[in-house]
Amino acid sequence: MIIVLKKDAAQDVIDHVVEKIKGTGLAVHISKGKERTIIGAIGDESLLSSIQLDALPGVENVMPILKPYKLVSREFRKEGTVIELGGIKIGDRDVMVIAGPCSVENKDSLIDTARKVQASGAKILRGGAFKPRTSPYDFQGLGFDGLKLLSEARKATGLPIISELMDPRDTETFCEYVDIVQIGARNMQNFRLLTEVGKIKKPVLLKRGLSATIKEFLMSAEYIAAQGNSQIILCERGIRTFETATRNTLDLSAVPVLKEETHLPVFVDPSHAVGRWALVAPLAKAAVAVGADGLMIEVHPDPENALCDGAQSLKPSKFAGLMEEVNKVAESIGRRI
Ligand code: PEP
Ligand code: MN
Image (cartoon, rainbow, N blue to C red):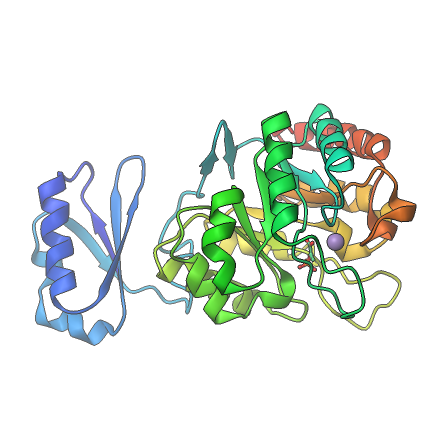
């Protein structure tokens, strides 16, 4: 149920409504907008019949949330969520670009790549330390040593860092190192993991599962939000279809659909979608044209010798060109990189 409070309702009025709802045993989630506070009462709504919600002081409107995803739905929050991280704003006017290698390999190449992507306008550095590889014989990442190298790169450049968390037991350590926790496509429905990152105070970038519908994607985001963490970034990264010309099929229509359905920022990762570096720039431009709030792009100084995903990685010089082209598209729709 959504309880919309009157414009500029005072704190004691809000507290009273919250206490009443909590008294019924339902969970309360508060969303403070510019003018109004909205309260989400989540759980068995029949319990609310014991209180007369619309008669409580400060309450303007009481409405059911019809979608199965509650807290992440646009019904619950009309304004887009803006996540502030250091000096940057995710989900605001500027298109945010996350760039870096698929996996962290060594300090020099990571810092060199970080400096180059930063010079081209990337605002967040990516790098996998724990890699979800299809084969157990492939490079699995440097583990915690990779996270340490990422934090050295942050120190050298000031760029916030993002890396993928695969094991719920590593959550606390991850939070010591990274600024954004990534949940990969293969773990989109790892509900224990989602519940753990729902309890942290850092943004979470949730990738769409390989064969997940948009509804399933949003239900996974709801797992995170239900634990109290509303700093969630959704990332479309291509889905499995019958098409084999590209690694996956980038579902660009997911972007405007998600923007309609949810208030969360929506990113696109064209690198993992197409699997071929030459296709990354055209799809990055298309993603921004259809309304993506950000991009995630793999960049490697020497893709031929990359330990992971070299075929889809852009050299820093090619990435610089992509950023210029993407910026033109962004400017044409009143945004910028
Ligand atoms: C990644 O970003 O490193 C990754 C493995 O992506 P995905 O989970 O989308 O496959
Ligand atoms: Mn990769």
